[in-house]
Length: 299
Image 1 (cartoon, rainbow, N blue to C red):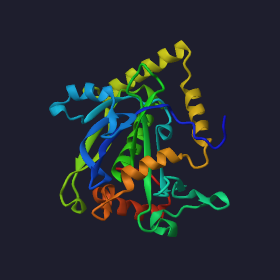
Image 2: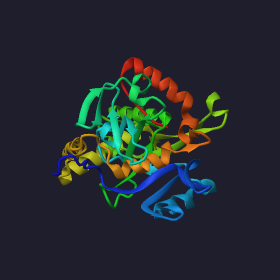
Image 3: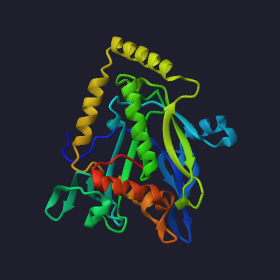
Image 4: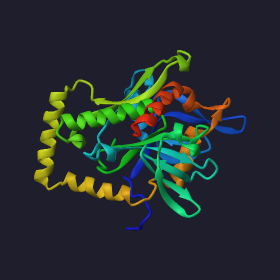
């Protein structure tokens, strides 16, 4: 295995609740009130939609995708959702510092060094809003490719916190059978004083409609038993994935960093769109984390 290269689940496409639009010759992020599922190919109009987008849109009320059936490919919640404080060079997309609220990996002229991570509010390097929580959720949408995933990226506090909690709760309730549960991504909205009473959208993870928790657990146990009988070892899959993530020192490559910078860090009317949506929540989050020294989530 090549050292220094993050081995992540194969990505078939992307899930987003926003898009990049061109205004006055600039590519700028714009929020949306629905999911969009895209491929990994771009043209002059942006990311090309994946065929699954059209299929789900045809079944959705008003053709707006607000729920997406998903399956987790790992039982360990932290393998499905990775979230850290991340600071990027906005010109190159290179990750400069990645931390968890306790320690961080920082790129310096001497190489990658380990430092204490006091949270963005208390870190001199992070001043000016340059460092944000950054989460990546990998989910399976096409069960014909068992290990192929679609990735949802976010710097939103509400999404990260909610997804982190849901994954932990469902894992505990099912006895660690997270990969066997019938789940769905659900788009939710909320308003705050900082959003000027306008809705802020974030992503939640729930059981699929019409399925109770007890029924979901019964289904999960049945699927787990059948998989083991067929010779499938989920524990080994989680182990290999954990090794792959740990193979990179900072866990984020330059190509991914460029996408993040374009989607979440560009400015509209003097302030990033994502910050306008979550200013109140992220301020509370950073203050709490500065005292506690741990990280949880995104919007």
